Each structure stands twice: as structure tokens, then as C-alpha cells.
Length: 294
Image (cartoon, rainbow, N blue to C red; front, side):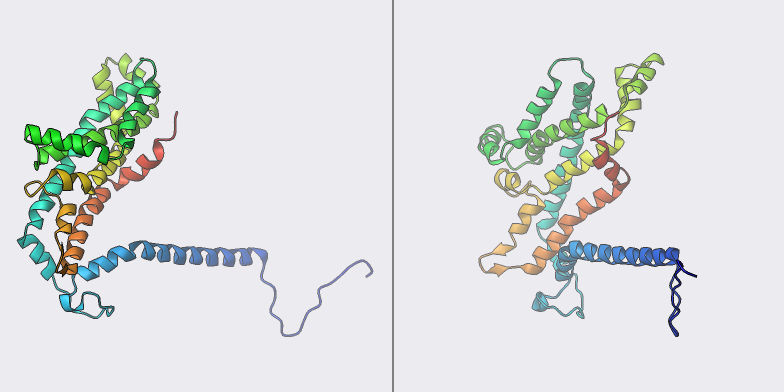
């Protein structure tokens, strides 16, 4: 009939797939491409760590080899623990955990006071506290060095803990203030009506609700203390030397001990990974929840 058109059937041609089937195929292909891209990105990110790990278990005569078919050895790790690196590693663990715990102990109540206090210019005070973290570390080196030499805190764990506490405290106050401001005041007012005081409300209501932020702040403080090299190099000698400083001792005039450097670097990365995994349930929430306000 006139005015009507028909699709001509071509002999031997396959019937066209329905639109829904084509859409399903495209989604499967898109998902497969996304999975491949994710795996590739993970491998690229992990490549330096994996390469360092395989260097730490290679024999010295094949330390820069590209052949993956080699006989692994733990010789480099054994040399580390028989030497002075073990003591430096323990110093790093004690100093980092202590400074992080003290920063959270003193900084969290201060952040709560800034977020709930009725005094004026709270934002200005918080910005002034954060400004202490913006100064370059070298600006504080000589005052700390002279003061520690005078009072006898040079080359001690307590000395480094105080230094890291000074910088981590500002970070804790700034971050936790944002998390406390995200806690609805109605919940605290309900606790007050039930007879709770300020400290009871803080411990039973506000602090548990801010646990993700507390975990994220703890991880950041631990990483900053653990990875510090400058202050540990200047303010310590042998007794309180940390792991990052101990790694430098493997760089000598006669040559670089690459196997020990790789093994030490692998061990230095492990505590950060383990600590992050322990609080991973709160870490993602904490890194994304501080910017939202009720």
C-alpha cells in the first residue's frame, strides 16, 4: 500500500537484536572494561611496593635482576634484626603511638570545646591553632635543639614525643572540630534532659558518633609521626633513633646496601598498612563525613 514502508529482508542476514538485548550487552562490556581498568590501576599503584618487596628477598648477587624465577631469601631481614635497626623500629612504634594517643587525648576535648563553646571568634582561634602546623619544620629546629640540650631531652623518646605532639595537636583540634559540628545538637540536648552532664554527654553521645572522624585523625597523626625524618635526625643520636633515620645508615661511602634498604623500607611500611586496616571500617566514613553539617 502507498504510504507504508517495509524493511527488506536480506537473505542470509541475522535478525537484528532487540534494543534491550543490545543495552544488556553494552552494560556487560562496560562492566568488563571497568573491571580491567580497576585491576590495571591497582597494579600501577602497588607496583613500587611489590618491586621493593621482591628486592628485599632477592640474593645480593641478583638484587637488580628482572627474572622472577629466583630463590627467595630472608637474609636481609635477619641482618636487620641482628643489628641496630630493631631498636630503631621499636623506637618508631613507641614514639608514634604515644604521640598519637596524647594528641587525641588532649586535642579531642579541646575540639569539642571549640565546637560547642559559647565564646566569641571560635573560627579565628581554630585558624590560629592550625597556623602552628603551617610553619616549616626547620623554623622550630634550632629552638627545640637548644631547649632539649639545656633540659636534657636530646636523644630521648620523650623529646620526640613532645615534638610530634606539638604538631599533631593542631591537626586533631582542626579536624575533630568539624566532626563535632556535624553531630546534631538535639541529641546532646536530649542527653542533658535525661540528666547527663557535659562530660557524660561528650563521652556517651558526641564521641561515639564521631568515632569515624577519630579513626581518620588517628591514622593521619600516626603517619605524620611515623614518617618524620627531619626532627628525628636532628634531635636524636643513637638511643632514640627512629626507623627512617636508621635506613640512611645503610647508605655508605663504600656503596649502598640495597638489600637491607629494601627490607627496612618494607618493614617501615607495614605498621601504617596494619594500622589503617584495623580502622578501615571507620576510615572511609571519617574522611568523608567531616564536611557534612546537619
